[in-house]
Structures are given as structure tokens and as C-alpha cells.
Image (tube, rainbow, N blue to C red; front, side, top):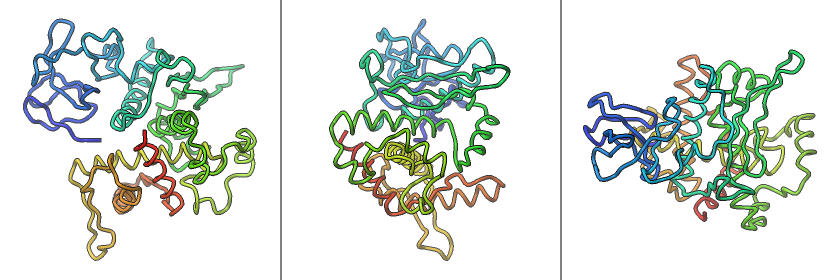
Length: 350
């Protein structure tokens, strides 16, 4: 994620900022420009301070401070390009529901930033009624006094996210019970969207041969493969070939996990580049790295990984110094790097 600047006073601003702390102007993200802009009110609309002829308005979800993205003034759609994909949202009659939706919306916009940067397909259900990208943020149910957790998953463009995972305690309980080293809302969005991207860029474009050469045959029974994984766990040597234990369950999950990690790595490297971060441990020059390229236009996965490994090691070390878990507790084996490069090629071809 890039570091932005207020286009009125030059103050550094961040992707989720609502107001410039120096000049006081209202801020909004204009997705068509992939940029934050200072805004000046014009009735129910807003004008870009730096370009007064450009008239926009806030996404309808801005009324509850859910979203800071803009919509072109003449667009009949009330929601921004990210929020218009939402079908079921958390209960806004309670503060808990609003708080959950704010955290969910923040993660969703980070996902869409990457989709827009790469111009990846993201038709909504109006544009593609059979397989458009739709999000349901589901509440848990109570049956006979027992809480039945909502399911996070994907089916033909419909992505469901358990709304309760916007709460840190609930998400940590789920992470611990499933023995996962990493579990975040953004991770859910990126993983489940990986399944959607597989549909659009592999299945619908008949790119099976190249996919199977890297990930294996997805025609293996999915339900049986998952049951095998849950009953017996991953293979003993899974880290030699997979980015996570869950990735070993089925080629579809392997692709979705690699897609999510590709977004993790690229977006974090862009953040590091934006802040001018470099790693050069004293006495360990083989661990030196600088992000002197645009990660969103990487020439290879090797280029990304050569910068990512030293940076992630440094970040993990800082986390441990603060008494926290590693931010990136994963191993990038050569087969995994090959899979990441396949993801890169698929994205570039799109």
C-alpha cells in the first residue's frame, strides 16, 4: 500500500485517513485514480481541491463511517466500486454490528486496491448474474442455546465471511482451535477471492493444462480431499511443497492460498518501498535487501522473494522483540516460489 500526500498541503496521509491533520480538508479515495484527494463540499457532492472541475460524492456507506471511497457524481450507483459487491452486511442497529462492518470494510478495500491495481476481473452480480463477485457477511446463529458459527467460504462468485471474525477474541479463538499460524480478515478476503479468480482466469479461460502442471489435478474429489485433510492432517513433509498446511488439501486451496500470499507479499513490499525501508544487517550482507522496484510490476516471483525474505525476517524479529507472534510465519520453498510465479503470470496475462 502506497503512502499518499494531501494534494492541498503535502501532509503524508494514509489509505484509511478521513481528514488531513494539517490543513483540515476532508479526504477521500478516488478508485478510478487509485489516489487519496482533499475534498471541498459542493452541496451533496464534493470537488477535488486540486481539480475543482472534478465532482464526486461519497459512497453511501460513508454515512456510518464504513467507507471513505468516492463515486463519480453522475454515477447512478449509490455505492463505491467495492461496496456495491455487498449483499448481506452486519447488523447496523447495534454498535457491535457497525464496529464489525467498519473492520470488514477496511479489509475489503485493501483487497480491492490490489484488484484495481492489476485490473483483475471483478464483475458484480448485475454484470454477471451467474458468477459475479458477491459478499455476504454472515452473523452466527443460536440453535438450542448453542452458537453455530457462520461459514467463511466461496461458491461461484459468492463469498461468505463470518462477521464475528471482525472481533479479535473470536478470530483468535478460531485461529487457535484450527491450529493456524496466521488468521486475519484481510487473509480471508484474499484467499476466498483467490477461488473467484481461479474461476475467471483459469476455468473460464480453459487454462487447465498450465494450472495442473504446477498445482496438480483439481478434478480430484474436493469434498473427499477436505475430509481426508481434516481427519488426518497434512502430509508429513507438506512444507517442502506448500505455503500452508491447508494448501495441501486440494489444488483449489493451494491456488487460493498462493494467491492470498502473493497479495500479502506484493502489498507489503509496496508499503516498504513507499516508506523507503531497506534491510542491511551488520555482518550479514547476504540478508541485505531494498525494494527498488514496483512490486505490482515484478518481473518474477524470485525478484519479490529476494526482497521479501530479508524484510519478513526483520519484521518477525521486531515482532518477537515486542513479545508478539511472527507477522509472517511461513516458509517459501522453491516449489512454492514456482507457484507464486505462476500466479504472477496469470495476473500479468489478465
